[in-house]
Length: 393
Image (tube, rainbow, N blue to C red; front, top):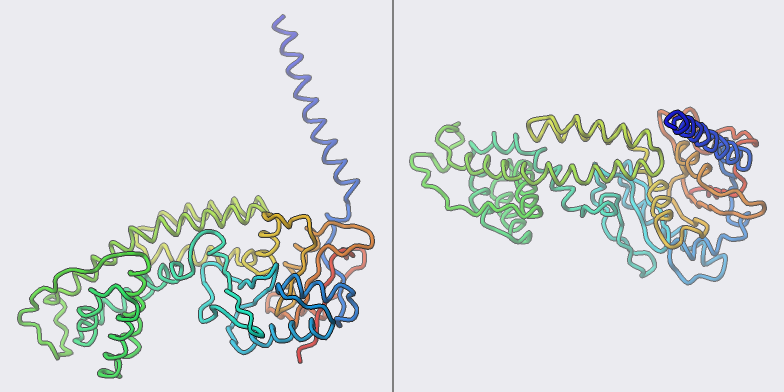
């Protein structure tokens, strides 16, 4: 009886393996195209795409009906981004919203934009994963400027700003104090700005620095002499940094674990490698070293923060996952994003399931050819994925 059970168990195991193989073979034979897809079809004018008006309408969330109107909206959208001139950034319009690339190194100076009277809030990946942009900025600013400010506390203008700003909760008040001190001590403007970023970052993370100002005793109030051992502000400043460490590390870890899961939704092996790297980064004892390590780790997987990945991720999670993906991107898709879109676009004869309109050529030092000069093997082109690469005007 026991031997029969063993035989049945072994037979069941073999059957399970056989069924797994059949499922793989079935998928490979029925949809072989997706495994070898690397490119999308390319055209250079709006008129080559009969759905162009619908693409602009859905991507930008506007009620446009005519070709000229759609052309104007797409051009105006690209012009607004061009005016901002934010290096290393890209925007993409999808489903009525606008998204900016990047995660760890958030895009700065590119908040809300207005096109033909319509206001768009620019959305970044950290927000999608549950971390507001201002918190992400704070978690970078605090460790980045700590050492510089700690050293500069020997100087009266820096101590004075700390003593006045540490009790303030409102950003406007901190900014007012910054303007006053910068006007009074112009040679310290840059350092004062860093100190203001530090204090504002603490407020964003709800870290309290409101403590009584100790008696500075014999410390000269206008002297630039190094009196480090006698400066009570240094102890307050270090205590604020200790509190920041207790807040930033768990908050950053939570966000980056979500980013690992986000990567897994595209590539399981890459996502697991990212999470392993994150676990190793957690072993760093001080906050600055930890931030430096996770920064390098995120750069390794930076391709997953490109705008095309962001909108594909959102589409897969949303109620519109079964609809075609229509988007407007300032830059053409890079080689990696084009491959991702080609492999994730369902192939249907005579139907376009992904259309990306772009307004400028993508160039990168690590890619052999620019987005508009690469050779595309016809056998590797997904004909249900169209790229409309418009000439910059």
